[in-house]
Image (cartoon, rainbow, N blue to C red; front, side, top):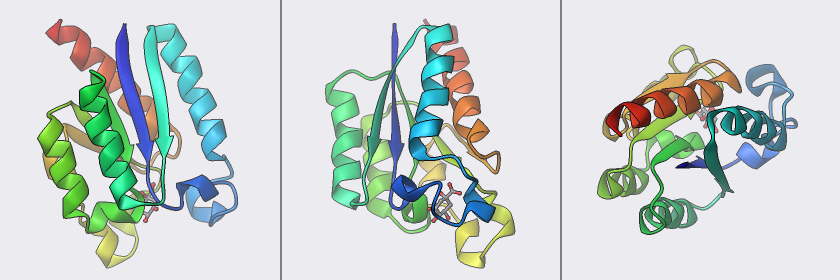
Length: 148
Ligand code: DQA
C-alpha cells in the first residue's frame, strides 16, 4: 500500500475563515476528508500534518523519509516564496513531492509568482482549490505505480 503524507503550512489551519473569496469556504478538515475518500478508492494510506512553524514542517518532511513514505503533497503557504530551508528538506529526502496551491499564485501579488520549493518538487499544481490536492494525489498514484 502506498503511503503519502500531506503537509500544510502556515495559516492553512484557518481555511474557511481566511479570505474565502481567494481560498474558498472549505476548511482544512473538509479538504482532508475529500482526500481520504479518494485515497480509499486508490488504496493509499494518507497521513496529514499542518503547522505554522517552519522547523516543524521540516521535521515532518524528514519524518516522511524515516517512516518510509512513498510520496509527499505539500502546500507550504507563504513559505513557498522564501523558505530555502523547506526547499532543502524536500531535496534532502528525495521522496517524490508535488507542491500544491489552492489559489493560482501566478495571477496574484508579484511576490507569490516565485516558488523556491517547486524546483525541487516533481511538479506544482496551482489554482484549483481543493482539486489541486486531489489532482496531486492522482499524479503521485500514477507515477508511483508506474515505477513499481
Ligand atoms: C497558498 C498561496 C500562498 O501564496 C499563500 O501564502 C498561502 C496559500 C495557496 O494555497 O494558494 O498561504 O499556498
